[in-house]
Amino acid sequence: MTEFEVPVLSIKNLNKQFGPGCDHCRNPEPMALIKNYCSVCGTVYACRDVSFDVYPGEVLGIVGESGSGKSTLMQCLYFDQETTSGEGYISSYQNGLKNLFEESSQQKRYIRNHLMGKVYQNPLLGLKIDFSSIGNIAEKLIAAGSRNVGMMEARGSELLSKVNIPVHRRKEAPKNFSGGMQQRVQIAKALSNQPPILLLDEVTTGLDLSVQASVLDLIKSLQREMNISIVLVSHDLGVIRMLADRTLVMLEGQVIEQGLTDQILEDPQAPFTQSLVHSLL
Amino acid sequence: MNTAYNFAFFDEGSKREIRRATLKAIAIPGYQVPFASREMPIGRGWGTGGLQLTLSLIGKEDVLKVIDQGSDESVNAVSIKKLVSDTTGVQITDHTSRATIIQSRHRIPEVPLNKDQILVLQVPLPEPLRYFEPSEHETKKLHAEKEYSGAWLMLFEQIMKYGSMTTGADHPVMVHDRYVMAPSPIPRFDNSKMNENEALILLGAGREKKIYAVPPFTKIVSLDFEDYPFEGESFDGKCCRLCGSEGVFLDELIDEATGETYYQCNDTSYCCEILNEVEKAGVN
Image 1 (cartoon, rainbow over the protein chains, first blue to last red):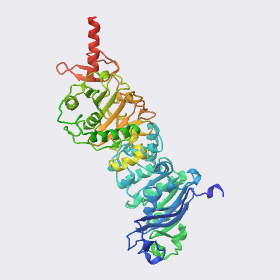
Image 2: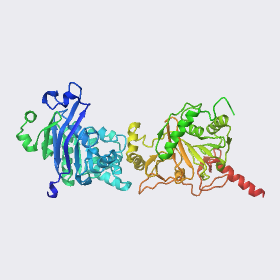
Image 3: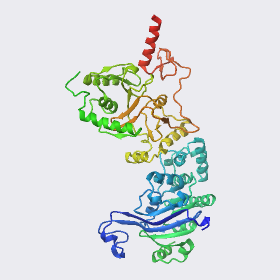
């Protein structure tokens, strides 16, 4: 295989369940569950057997209705949640030979700090809301080993101006900012140590249209410039159409369809995808 | 000595429990060991952590010194000394070099400690990451994973806001390249005294129910940045107006009548000893 064909991130058979499971729902027969919920023991199967690869510089979109397991999947990828089973590999970590989900929590911390960036739907989750904006960016740099204030300040200011936050407001806390600005501080933070993989969880949901557009623009141009691979979760097909090269469609914790974004949107195969595309305004 | 109480106030079981926690703390330098902080005849937050350590360790042969912000005669120091001597009958001293156990609030004495001494520090807030992360459950994980970016981030914020690290006291330290520790609110001036100290240093937080330790000859490094190195308080060109000492931690005092600023040793017994030596030399 040539170099560019090696995936940056490779996920194999990821499962995540909330609850112990019982004989009834472990049964592989399709009727055992109501959607992804077991009525006998109350277990929710949030992600079922999810596998995908992300290639260098690629944007992978994940769509699905709410409750389909998109965010749980993202949380598993960023180690916010323990996975129930499954494997994950990053090409730049141990030559892609070590299963991420079986690493110690110290190693997971290392992977998060050095190889990944994540932007949460809710800025409160991704930011220290009382600390200064530049401090928030520095946090990621400190975690990745930097101990030089001058360097961190310069890098932070550079990123903030890239996400269109005036440099004179860099010492202000994100709690004083509007939602859109908070989201942009989060993006700056996630990008600060130039991670090969960026996870975006519903970044534009809840933002007004003009801010949405500028945030999307920003993500697209940064991605081109830095050649980062992105996993992008959204239930907004417009966002997916604009950003994603390839798309997975999730329903009830499973990937029901995947392919090039154009293909998925123009020629949806699964009934759910069809109704999703048809309901696009 | 008041015989209505067991020796050193506590029953033997309580003392053993505290000593067991202390041993664990010494075995894992800088790690906060939880212990069952007892009810004391003084309020929590008034040195009960230090006092419990002292009471659990003290033996009949020990000589005790208690200081509060460098002073042997402040109310807190005096009442702690009274309680301990009342329930143990041990000797009390002001001389740092004569003491075997030194309980202190917010200072490490000027006279260098030796290997036969134990320094007990009273700690109000043992968790160096508390301001950064309010949940104990989370800070425990951060310590376990050696994830200390929060400690540096707090210093970074100070530099951003005020142009320098502004921790007046309780500047966090890295113990033996592993745990970040709150050294109790000693001035930054005293942080360097902890590094490779000959004496055993024990820290007790009664309200927060934690004991931790710096064993003798442990590497202690104050957190800082490459371009903002750690610095202790500087008293360049100033000396004690009573004993003339330089290079010690000085209190700044203002004479209200004249408005004049003068400096005086913070460690009163050290100042006294220097003055006595001068007087002796003068008589001879």
